[in-house]
Length: 528
Image (cartoon, rainbow, N blue to C red; front, side):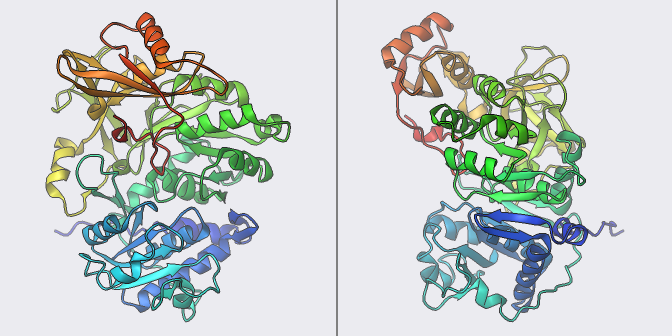
């Protein structure tokens, strides 16, 4: 018997907005303001251009684009055509782009001018190295009238010239793959998480319950999280458009520019990773009276943090400055991404990632097994997740899928956490970041939290380094507060007085900056 599935295409999020409020601003970038009707019409043209080239259901279309309107237009255009969007990190190099195109079986590739390695596109276009299926390549130019910067290639504008502004969206099944999101590849080659149309739809719709998102009170959101990443794509782009809001795009996060835009556009919704909140706080401390904090406070309705654990000190400092509590959420590319969220209206629990969102279950198991941990407030286990948000699997990687999706559809996250008596979860660390020093488990995040209570320390990252005697030793990298002074030796001595003997860092290195991903996460693998 053939199972019956429901017809649904994620592009209907944009189409519903265009029907309900066609003239409302959907996207703002500098002086550019595009209405819902305009974005929908442009997306329909993209769909028509793809369809004219034989691209449709089952085909994959790769997209490299920063936070500019082209991303949203291309994203929904690909979906309208019934194809699958494969968003790529804008910082990928030629070899990495070729790998992703090949691994995803991309049939077409849309790339914004100025993104790294664009010159490789012409050379790689004849099959993109090892990606012979990629038959079509379009350059997206900021100036729509500009010719392609790569000789012999077509711009998106040229491709759309003959495409009508109307397109009948392909009816897909809700279990069809809408988006393939590639993991960061911290271990081995990146893998593509297949997310269904319903995974992404259901994850967006929880906004009504978790963030009090309402169509009769649309938010204006600062879209500074990269839209190619799960957090920015679902929680900002799709979530805001679903409830009739406006996306104010900022292609690259710069704290002062972000604050200025928040003031100018009366931003009500801000979502960021912890380092962005750290940057905003520092920018406010260094700014003059040109930034009216009271005005920012009056506009900002909701602030969300995710991507990595939010240090308690940053959480408290932001609340004191802006007068609202940061709602901390948790999830992964494989979970569409939101799995848990703070409870709006309840007292803040700094350090907690909240409780499972509607339609999602979470539990703790012994790392490396599927056995539940013994209950207790101090019990630490690996988070496992089951629900409407969990991916199909990793595209073309069944063994990798089997390693993380177990009995009953539970997904293994790789994150260690504890759970309090009320069911709120607290991230302890990543399983791969765990430091085992002389047989003792040291959780880097705990050490980082303590270091950041030192009056001179602004930000900290802790790693394990090889040690012949104890297997691993604890090492910390810290950024000092502006004007503060402290040596590594002084911070080691302070740590010794404030932490157990097995966990305090034996080496503290003072640095000016820390390596970060395009999404603002600290790249610990580049520290040594």
